Image (cartoon, rainbow, N blue to C red; front, side, top):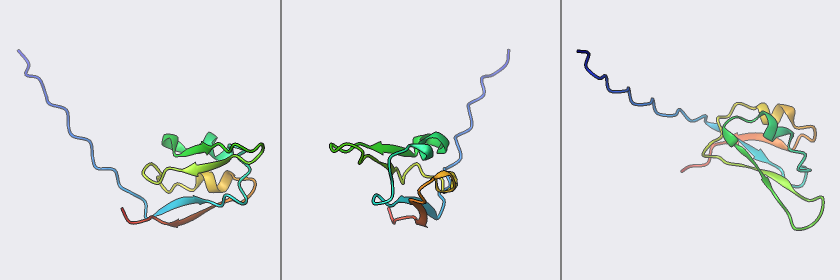
Length: 85
């Protein structure tokens, strides 16, 4: 009879030294970044005033892939050093 094999523990997530930062003055909330960002990294930050929603980045999930920065039609996203935990 075959013995059960314990699953290997997952490798620790390697964090990028850089994360995406949204300039809220430039962000229009178009959500282009949400469509390309992996792991639900970008979230809509809804405003109570019409046409002023923007996107917020979850630094804990950001992989530093730069996809959101490259797709942003408003150049509202830049990469910055990851904040200390």
